[in-house]
Amino acid sequence: MTAETSNMAECPDCSGKVSKRAPQCPQCGCPLESIAAMRLDGKDGIVTERQLLVQIRESMRATMRLVMCSLFFTSVMLVVVLLIFWDIASWIDK
Image (tube, rainbow, N blue to C red; front, top):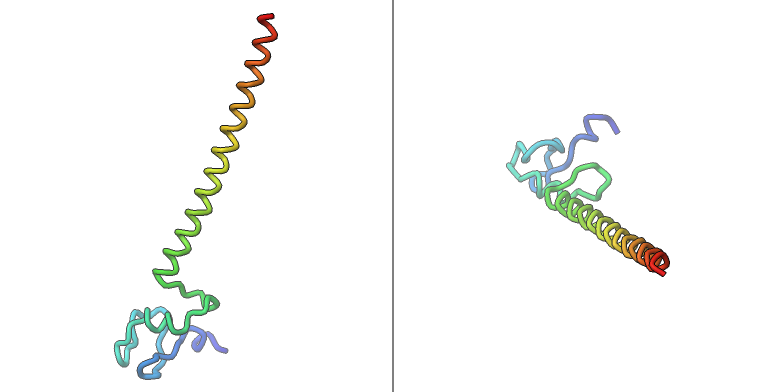
């Protein structure tokens, strides 16, 4: 596969060669998004706007899970430390 053919795709409407970076087919005007959606299998490096939004949403969910777990762990540790200090304070008062 040459560099020229690896950067080209086939238009589903007219079967013409289209650059993967082109916004539409130069022969018939078929939008690139429909071309990308037909050939996209995740291996050619082309990502549609919808796929990018899905990836961002999944990343945000993972980040929020990590933040929530961190907050929970920090809260539990704070309670443990406060209980230890309260217990020590009660020994000192005796």
